[in-house]
Image (cartoon, rainbow over all chains, first blue to last red; front, side):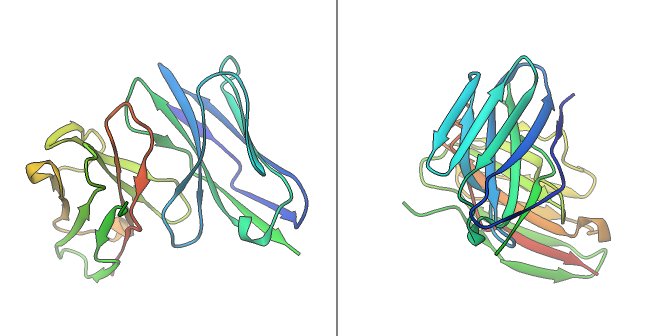
Length: 109
Length: 114
């Protein structure tokens, strides 16, 4: 089966850097995704990693280590609008994405 | 490009009643997904369609849930009879095909069963 673990909650202050970790166990790994979900809204795509290494996109970066079953999402220069839930999702063998429970990030001033 | 449309936005029903949700995917997207998201959890796949055929419905509680995608476009998800534990947000998503992970989610239907 598949198992995805990520912290339930995190807090940070404006302007800071925060790292949200995700560990996973799956067979036939085919990629890892990060989605952002504001309260009451639909998830929106942030990043996709299929090879080991760091993918940078503006203030957001995502890292993947396939051998360790580990990924993290790095958010820099935090803003209040970054307060949201961050969902780690795994794809295997072309199946639909399997999501973790999400990490609720609270950014304070 | 229009997004994924879902309706209704909110629904409150009593337990044992029935309810139906509707989804219209992005034009040309062959793959459609229904996810259930209980408060405080991540989305859980209920059913995946490729055109009008079912690819995966292994987590769909078939004794009470049903879904169809006639003509490979719009889809409806039905619950009959509803239970208290069905209270959740039901998200519809679509993608170009099964190998394309450019999922686009609709705004969801928030169901409350009382």
